[in-house]
Structures are given as C-alpha cells and as structure tokens.
Image 1 (cartoon, rainbow, N blue to C red):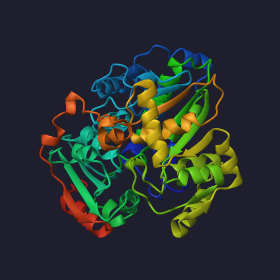
Image 2: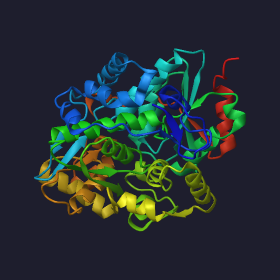
Image 3: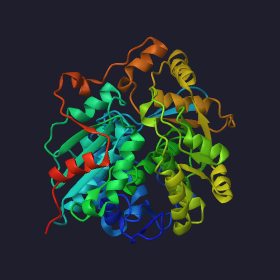
Length: 468
C-alpha cells in the first residue's frame, strides 16, 4: 500500500513512513493511493470476530508489508486489552431506530483512545527499527491530548508536546493531560488561543524547515493517517452487529475536525453498506455550511458546552475534497491555498454532488443539545455528553427510513462534562472508578503566549534532535 499527499507533490510513502511523517511535506495529508475493497462475502465472514481480530483484518490492507498479520493482531490485542468493556465499542439501543455506539471505554474516556492506544504502539514498533527519535507536536480541543499522552507516556524515543487553548477545555479533559508526569510529556496551555490557533501552529511547524531539519516531527492529530485507519474499524464492528452486509446502517457523528466521520466514508468506500453519514456540528458550523450550501468559510470560534467541536477549520475535510475532486492534488493544492489566504472557499460542483450522495449535515444549538441530553435520560435512562447530544439531535431529525438503524457515535463519557449534563438532567455523572482520583492528582503544565515563536522555542529547547 502506497500513500500519496492530497496536494500532489510530497514523496510517496509506505504505511510506516506515513505513520511517522504525519503531515505531508507539501502541506497536504496522506491518503492511500487506492481504497481496498471487501465484497459482501468477505464482510459477512467478519461476523462474530473479537474486536482485536476484526481490527487486524480491516487494517491489514492499509498496513501492507510494514507489519506481518500476526504482529498487527498482537498490537491490536495489546491496545484493546486496556478497555474496560470486552466489546471495546459496545452498542446500546435507545428506541426502535436509534442506537448509541459507546466509544468511551478506553483509559481516557473518549473515542480518541480507540485509535491512539494503537498509534502509540505503532510509533514504538517503528522507532525500534531505527536510531531516530520522534517529536510529536499536537493540538487538542480536549480529547486528543489526553488520549495521545496516555498512549505515549514513558515510551522510548518519543517526546510529546501537546497544545491546548487555555480555559477552553473541561476540567476533566485538562487534568487527564496535566496529571501525567512522565518526563517525555509536555503540556502547553496557550493564552488567548482557540483550537484553530493551536492547530495552525502545529501545521506551521511541520512546514518550518528550521524545525523539521533538526527534529523528526510526527503527528497524533487525525492528520495522521494511522489514526483514521483505526477508527474505520468500529464502523464495521457496529454495522456487522446490526445486519451488515445484508442491511444498510446510518451513522450520526459529532465532528469538528472531520476525522471521525471521514473514517465512516472510508468504511463505505471499502464496501460497508452505509446508507447515510450525518455530520453533526454545534454552532461552529463550517462543515454544515459546506455540506448544505457549498460554503466552506471560516467564522469566529464560539465557545460552547461541546468544546471538542469548537472548530472552524476542519483539517480532514481536505481528504474528502481530494477524493471527490478526482484525486487531483495540484488542483486541490490551489483550492486550499486560496482558502488559507482568504479564509473562504466554495466547493466545486463535483465536490458538492459527490458529498451529497452519502453525507447530510445538521447544526445543533445549545437548546437542541440540552434537549437531546434530557430526552436520552428521560426516555432511555442514558446519560450522554454534549458532543454525543449534538449527534443524537441530528439523528432524531434526520427523517430517514425507519427500517434503517441510525447509530449515534457516543464520543465521550458524560462525566467529562458533568456541568452540562447536570444542567440538562439534574443528574451529575460520576467518573468511573478507574479514574476516580483524577482531581487529587498533581498537575504539571506550562503556560505560553499563543504565538508560533513561543511554541517553537519551547519545543526546540526540549526535544531530542535527529541522530547524526
């Protein structure tokens, strides 16, 4: 399997190279040269497999010769052995049509664990083959940071520098990052910054020759292909339980950076019968505007009770635009350069029409989000977090054929956002016992101004340079 950049000029890499590279050198994102396909019989043969075995089967075509099938399966067994539920991503039925896919049974109580527990092991596996060290630089709107830090804390040959917007993540999200005291972990709280500002700093660093010549900089954000690859698996796991390949399934996905829902698109390209992918946003609705009206224009970020979706530049949307635009990297490079210069872009007709075949979108405001939390509690006895609530609202107003099950991705444990859940339901969700002492742990974090120079200087002083 070869990996190409969405912007057309970066070197082609194998899976190992794409995993360690993160962002492509031309500013694009790596994608497989072609999508592997499973036919209906091959999908049916996956029924009943334990999650780790299913994961290895789904991911093997993407991994190619970088790992043997046995080694990939062993890494999956290790990664998913840390989850508190044997099903890893269990299903809960809400009513006749609506289901929840619980993605929060990993160590940091959010869906990012499903991918990042494996990604940490992949980094360690590939770095052990060489004398290189990896400097991971990431941005988080809340959940990526804690999941990535948990996955790589204490691992050899890896340093991680995680940027978060100060005051714009929940207390639980912050503490899950800042209470990890491993010497290779560096938490950076950026003053006056949004997630988009943090993400822009990370992208700039990948394109800063003074940094990339000196350090091997890697990514844990969903710009890293391996992270998206691991997320494809739970679409298969859920659809198989609900009757695939003999039955279509729809998914409603709370999204800000478009990575989680793009993994659903990949599953559909691989042959999984997905009737619809519903893109659910909060009031930071650039993706809703792009899919509904073709208007991909950056607005001002509004802080909400669903902070992981408080994003106005969705990095992974570029992967979809590349695929829908005939995989013309040079044309997309020009399109993205225009967006980066003007903060506005209109989708082409081919991009709009291609997206409309699979995607719909929905924007949930604060009242609609709270109503969905309340409905899930009062009618189903389920406490859900604000991000999941945005997607459940979108699912319930989607108007799909009642025969098609709609699976809402429950992306975080409700205890990560206790105030919002309590306001809506009167119930304050408690942390699971495995993280129950979180608020008694020591914190360690560095505050910086939200500028590129401040972050680059901090990283340059502490990261391990390339060998030689």
